[in-house]
Length: 201
Image (cartoon, rainbow, N blue to C red; front, side, top):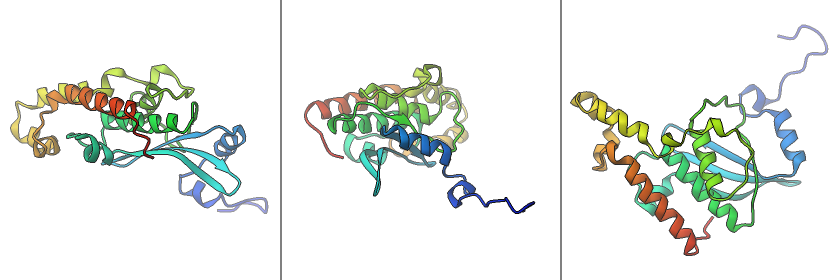
């Protein structure tokens, strides 16, 4: 509620918790591409965007659904390993567009160490894109899904809980315990596909 005549209503996207306009202004002024990772419960979407006078231009993008359609990923597309692999694809596509650096734009999200945001960031970096970051925020073991494999092994003794928690894995006929090996195979397939000239955006 307004308390005096100087009160100003915040802009709509700030009220909705979508845009930090102060941070956005600094990013636009820097004239550097922005790395924009966004997540839902089931999917990961990553874009590298540059601000232009007539609006934002997407330089490269990737979506985690591509992992299933193109590379044979059998695990869920919204988890940490999927975020890393999606970042890897986006990073390679950015390199093909001559993008070599970016700044991380996470909006108003307050991420925790080892979260999907930093998994996606790690994939981008491993593709060769320079992004300023704190290395302590990335937990390498989680990128490969080792924490999921460990949890699957623990939960396996309780068949009901295991079936409920890993229903997607069971549907795809993959054990969470072999997720790190599956991750390594898909990662190698992605790297090889771009070595062989995959420049799709």
